[in-house]
Length: 297
Length: 333
Image (cartoon, rainbow over all chains, first blue to last red):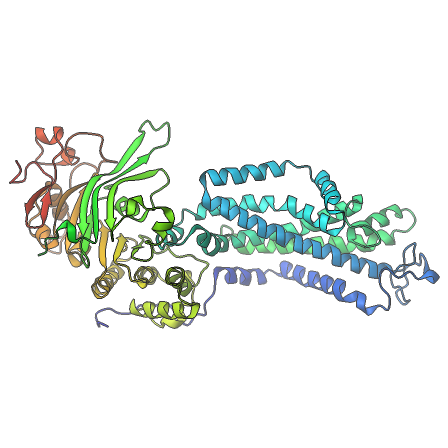
């Protein structure tokens, strides 16, 4: 090693390795409102998934001695029972399981499909891109409720049909957003350098395009979760989603609405939980956007 | 001094032209960036291509690499290792790029993926082309980072690009290009985006590593100082055509073409008294090339005469290893 070439040690090389994504999450963790959202959401998720085990009965068990019982926090049914004597709290928590699972899994699935589709279209460009995006525009045109009914018929109804229908309609927007990102990225020098290094298109999309669209995808994905939960509730409310006797927030609210004039409690409990979850998710999405947006610093 | 016959060439470029189809409505149709140039590169040789902005020097490299913009088209022939680079299919090109042919880009700030650890980016090529395991590729990458004198290479390999300075990133790019042990290295103004002090380090490092690895290098730059320091042979490009080609020592001692003379005269020197006006070449560089008859430099040439405007001078041998395209140079018919 010749001595006339000094090493550059001006930067502290002892800084731990930190990706841009890790930096962004560090900024996110400083946002109090968003972190409060994360905390409340975590509590609700835990309550929904663990809470029902604390009761000696399930949401399907009818207690014929206590049909239509009102709120009595110190009885066996703290929030009372419904017209069939099923415990309201347990049913709301069990419904939360369904709604939250569909919300997160649906957003994840739609996000993954959208990101990959958009990244491929944006990187490939030209005719491939044009055809792929025309396909997206055609799918955008499908009326969503009719699509769900069709898929329910096709898949024999039930949770799977609902899930498929939600994913089918919601992957389109992330695909469009990511495709715009991928188009810009495909002209960046590091992608050119990867091509100069003999990387194939698939390798470039997976290792270079997709990771660079992740922060946008995460921000959009956080907006997608409440959208999916709302979609599920809406469809269940209409009676084409989750069906009795299985509970979801959507159909619990629907039952609550029909009894609204006589007993507000059946509506309030599921509706409050749904609203709280949506609030938390929106605060989180807001915090993520603030932390991830390079123009807003 | 070496005179390299074309037959021994590692890379032999014949009649390379690069044309761009311009968008409708600009009224220009086709733009010519490189206009029928031929040259060779011998194994282990460092060839400099100099020229001002818009002379087409970078497009030569992009054409060889198959990286032209989508509206660009390269014609001619570029024999490298027995294959015509310009005629290869995309999969065949991927077996050459990053294997025997690699490239260093101009701007180290944008040439690294911000979301990938530096070591992983280096190892990527080895894993893709040489089938090395993750561990072996990482070890090779760390060793190479050490070779380009990144301090504490093993730790640094786990860092992300934004944790490196510009000079260090360019060293990473050099490491990436040399890691696969290419036969030919294409360098597109690798020092332009760097500080002057860092430039010198990077140039010395490239000279050392190129000599050590035995890789031939094409070094595209507009910095004559870099050429003097690094190159065996120089091609002076103007308007997409070769104006002069000569061994570096010959070119710097006695440039023949008026443009090469002008370039050398315009180089600031330590001996220039302070406050003295810098010598410049009058006029502005032409945008694009080709299409018109005559010498592309004619509008700016001090020694221009009628023949220069009507007849394009061809490249003629003007001395041992030298070629010049100028009607004025002695020996021209």
